[in-house]
Image (tube, rainbow, N blue to C red):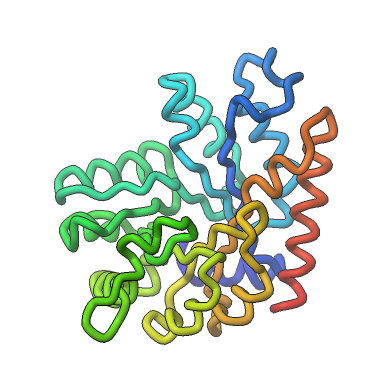
Length: 266
């Protein structure tokens, strides 16, 4: 999916909601456990309940990888089930030397058909650039994350700026706003206005709204650009809004509440 298509989707749906399919086999409703593929059965119901309210789905691959081959099969079924007009994110946080990164990129872009993959930039340019070599695919680079440990390295001062600002400024020069996004945690809303000055045109993938306590109002007010420029992710707050046989209805209600709030900011 290219930038123009993504922006148009956001405008049409009056939504910049990304639903995180961080599906924990231990948290899904118990009545699904007898299904041949419980994780896919859960994801299918969540997708059916939210696909008209969101513009993206983010699949955290760790929840699937730990299940071995069955988990990868659940992941593949899930990606294939997501409507083709919705943006897909492999939250895999890959990043290695060039040749390895190329194969990571092929895994998620070609084998599984994702539109994007999250990338850890610690190893530098040759670990990120392979993810930028595929037409209409996106690298989503870790910028300023929502976890407490972001203070350990990301917020350290490097000259006149924070390390995360230097990372984002440098990475932006390797790609463009058409093929690179940045992860910016919703719990870091106080820094978002300054980050926008560093990368004014890029999209931000924003985790941390809902269960982690991030404010949708703050991130929307400080993070939007002329193309909206935000994909705000909600995982637990949506997919685990309910835990009985009505779980999909509860997920729909939670997603609808977020979509309505987003519509008010657009």
